[in-house]
Amino acid sequence: MRRILPALYIVMLFSILLAWRYMLAPEMVGFGRSVMAVVFFVSNIFFSRNIDYFASDVETAPLIHAWSLSVEEQFYLVFPIIAAIWVARGWSLIYMVASLTVISFALAEWASKTHPAFDFYYLPTRAWELGVGAMVALAPWHRLRLGQGVHEAASIAGLSAIVLSVAFLDRNIPFPGVFALAPVIGAALVIGFAHPDTFCGRLLGVDPLVRVGLLSYSAYLWHQPLFAFARLGLLSTPSKWLLLLIGGVALCLAYVSWRYVESPCRDKRLTPTRPLAFGAVAAGLALCLFGIAMHHYAGVPGRYSPGISAIAAGLDYRIPRFAECLGDFDHVVAPDEACEYHPQLPSHIAIWGDSHSASIAGALAAGLAEQGASLKQFNLAACPPIRGVHIFLSERPNTCNVYNDKVFSYISDHAELKTIILYARWPTYMDGNGYDNGEGGRSGRSGHRAALPATEGAEFVDDPRRVEAVGALLRANVEKLLSIGRNVVVVYPTPEIGCLVPRCMAQRRLTGRDGPVSVSYAFFQDRTFTFRDQIDRFPDRPNLLRVKPEAVFCNRPLAGRCIAESDEAPLYYDDNHLNDAGASLLTRLIVAELRRKGWL
Image (tube, rainbow, N blue to C red; front, side):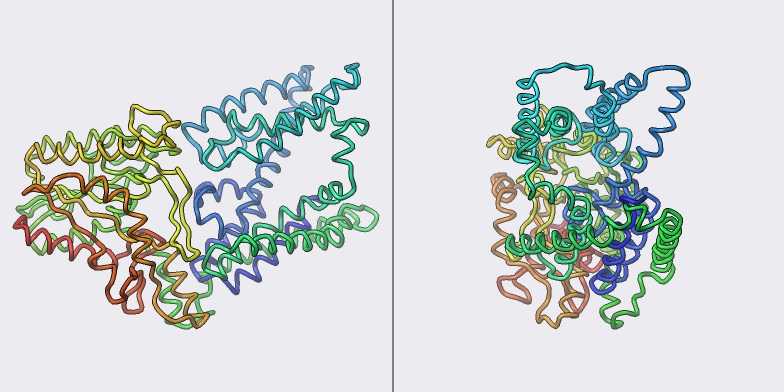
């Protein structure tokens, strides 16, 4: 309590003040829930269900870093209970710790490939890291009469492992599995062997590094809120120089926090236990009341004008029939259970793709119904409609391949599905890169959703042959559909924006910036080149239709730009998924093209 809570609550109060200024009403509701989760030390569970730690939205979550404190506190709660039971039976404590550490590590390595979100956030797969520290503390070092050379070598090896981990471990590496051994074991070696008379001991004992160590906890608390609110205020990714400046500010605030909050609260003479406990309970209660108020008052939209509040409400948009129709890797909607709109109509059409296709399905169904056609919806999030691929760094990566095979079999067995529409966030799967709009807006991360041939492993993600291989599979899938007598519609990529469109619109109006939210058409062309290059190699056929969303989103009304809003309303509900207005705009184009071909 003395170490963690006082400084944490000060940072949370600071975050609340900035959130009131920079967060829109829907965001304040989520922020309030995160405040309560942090107070009860379950933020790791909360964030695992609401935010992908390696996605772009994590950069604007002020308290996301508190997940690690929750894991730590959960360990402190569970470990003494298990240890007390174990010792009461007369068993060796260090053997218990070693056994649980090995089990936790094995679980983490398995989960890193099958359940990466659980692996990253939850105590069972994180406990081994803390268990290694406990083993270092419990180990009978005094019985080991090791020479100076052993201490020197072990401590240097440990410090080297930490430095190499910082240099080479990145967000594309499954963590915390086997790759986490290097920093964890490295830290254990430094703690166990870097005595004051070793080289590493002297190096780490220099005054500047000691001072940084003293400030480390407070600096950890301050850095994420500062970076998050800088991004919220700027509506773009801060420059490297600005990030360095913010990092310096974080260190300054960390010193103030350490000097006037953390240190006095750790000193029992300056801060007696009873007043500190009372203050902690009162502060925690006040923070929880804030979270409850944000939920009850819907984030207090009255802070802004009605027009801005209406735009901000776009952040709450949800794809129609989302839970029912859009499967994910944890819950796949089987093709024979797929959603169907107006099945009584004489003409039958299917849309096959990922969440992008799900985002337009409702609007498309309405447009098709006016033309006497029904719609069958085959959707799996983060899975392009390409047979023979699996997805890099996704949970249950082979699920996509299996699902697409089942969809194709269903289509083959149901001749009434005469027209098949293929639509997805194609550039993500083809290039495997996050999006950068060239104007400070970024989303996604490199390699996260890259498509790979099902016959290749994760190491193939950086192979220069990957794009050609995936492109060949895409063309083969189109060819196969054509060969069984289906009309095929390939919907080309929709412009990605690089920021949450309702947020960008609202903030532009709050700050008096002119012009609608839009992105460069040239950057859009560059972003989509790989997909267009691959699909355009497929020759034109009478029963093949290409629909290009740029016809309605780009160069009208702004030359050289692709719009993200129209008539003071957003066309997207996030940075890449269309809302009902955007979906209506695109589906009118699709229906018009289908009519032109005589397929309606």
